[in-house]
Amino acid sequence: MASKLHNLSEYDANSMPDKAVVAKQSYAIAVADWNSNVTFKLLEGALEALEENGAVDVDVVHVPGAFELTYAAKYLQSKKKYDAIIVLGCVIQGDTPHFDYVCAGTTQGIAHLNATTDIPVIYGLITTNNMQQAEDRAGGCLGNKGDECAVAAIKMVNLKQQLKK
Ligand code: INI
Image 1 (cartoon, rainbow, N blue to C red):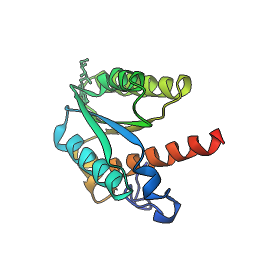
Image 2: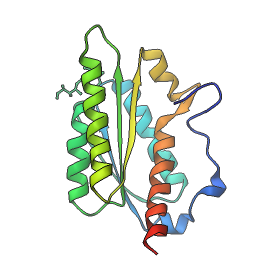
Image 3: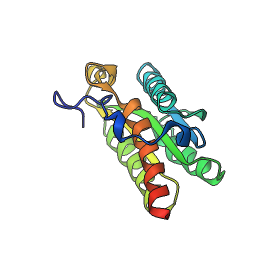
Image 4: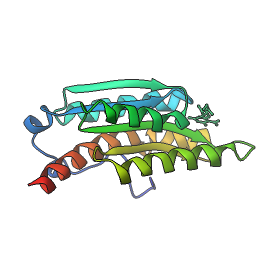
């Protein structure tokens, strides 16, 4: 969770794998078009952070809303091309319980993929009470969750390679 103490874009560059290693890997990003003013900023952040850390092979697919992210991630996994998949979305609290169902469904879907499959799916779903909180986390005063997800994706691929040895 982003707070005044934690900026989502900050990470220790020394803890990242060698760029030449990352350059050999493939990444996919599934981004939801709902609240695109936020999610496209997350996408920008993720792409920039991946590039900054050496990634050159990055594919992007779009889905209508957060609820479709699980399907996209599952399909991307099945292609057996990607070392990690990042999902990006933004769900903002409204007047009805719809928010809760979309958040829970998406979160459980992604958690299920991580618990049952080998290719890490990185969870870039912003769930906030209002638009300002979302903007703060998409390149605003609390950094960019897209950056955080890119860093997490690279670290998980590295972890998997370490564990395989
Ligand atoms: N999808 C989002 O990504 N964010 C939202 O805030 C949102 N709201 O509020 O409804 C939303 N709904 C659409 C949903 O994700 C699916 O696309 C739709 O239900 C079709 O399956």
